[in-house]
Length: 153
Image (cartoon, rainbow, N blue to C red; front, side, top):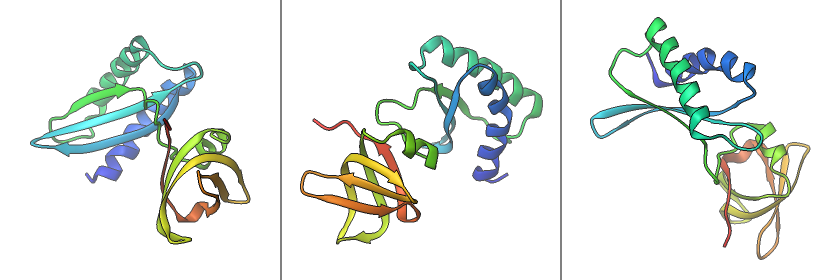
């Protein structure tokens, strides 16, 4: 089974539980590091997530994975918060981040740049308006390769 299929299957398994308990699925990763495979599930909720929340979600998901056995190899399951620099995977994530500091990379240069860090001023009409130290940049959402919250010192 491909990694994208495994990720989709895990999302389907865990989403009903998360919805029922007020959690948000931020991301699922299935990656090989060294000789080990890791299944990482990043979750959040209003007010933040704690270790007890992660434990409950991990317990539930582990039981579902044991029942359905979608992953043929041995792996480590990790459930955690996405952290302070949380990825913005969906349009809804970007919209909720207006007014916050972000770091955005694009597939092809815009105004000669491929990376933008600054305050997300708005997200309207499929465009991000980011105020960097030097100027404002309009970035079409379709050109965004990755986006995450940023801590700027």
